[in-house]
Length: 460
Image (cartoon, rainbow, N blue to C red; front, side, top):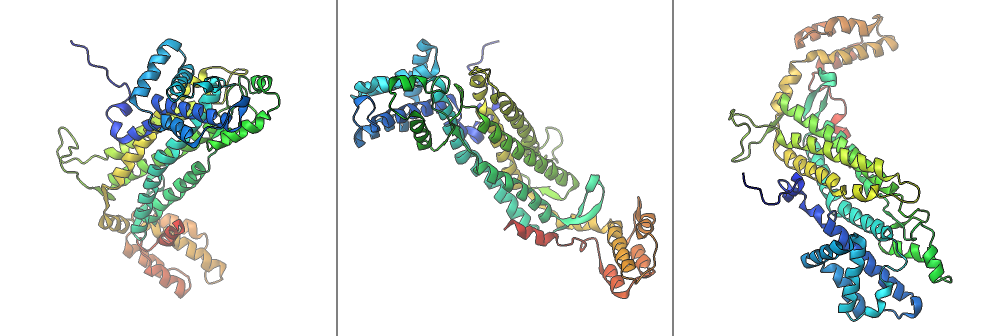
């Protein structure tokens, strides 16, 4: 048997690359290295702007040339860094040497010793991860997540009046509308979206053990915490003033917990839609050329929602593990976070793939309103709740002396099928006021939905 050419181990980089490839712009090794170069370049510019060690501020042209190194970072730069790291055996040191080369190319070699000045590798890494995770969330994950919310909200509004039988414990229960049930998920997902949008991305820039020791020795007259804060904030991050060698990663644990929470709500949505499909409430729209089964040609399987379930579970497993691992570092630093963080893209990738499948799946279903109505018409016993509640109100108002209305309706309906005629005859014989009796006689399972359709309006 011949050996295969190099193959991706993860389906995210193989079979599903087209759905998640945009994350690679940020949460890949190349994306991380570009961010590292960005941080190193901006630190150089920040130092010259402050005239550290007798330097003069760079001209706008020189700053633009340095920033083009980041903006035009591409395959040749990726290859060059890989070659440097093969020698240095240290990824951040390779970035430092790479930046020094670019300074030589631009005639700025006199600034070489300000490259990576007073930095530990984690000063560069923590800022780079914060920048790449922030951009991946804000530019890739959140827009896709919001697209799913918007699609779901549109379906909720479209089906706001579509009465359906509820299924508490899987059994016939007080009717709702499909729109209201979908609106519940919109509300849940929207809350999490706002929490993710408000997430903080923290950064530290304080040296080998977070004490500014080398900084103070090199330049004792500089207020280094102020410089650190200004630099971190210039990258669009929140400054963390108290750290060890590493930024403590609590913001990452918080963020990944929120994404994992979103995954689980989406998982609940996927299982509910799958169940509605199995009940026939939603028809799946056949896609041209698609095959549902290798042997049963009639099948249209709910694969979008099943695929989403699996990927949401994988995403949460990775993100939960990261959240648990990253908040612990032995004493002032260990390297467990270094290996763990290289899997951030995997966690987000599986979530993004699930979002893509849910989005596609929601666009391939059609509500069977006729079946919903038929289901309701076959379950008149669900009106037992309404009847016994009205009787209680009539007793409380002094218009009835019926004892234990709940037990009365339990005897009539529990575990039984009761038709429209049976309930009408029962209501006609009740000792209650005429107005209440007429309300009950006019009631049907399809009209017993309370204000479900109005609740959809709360989505705004």
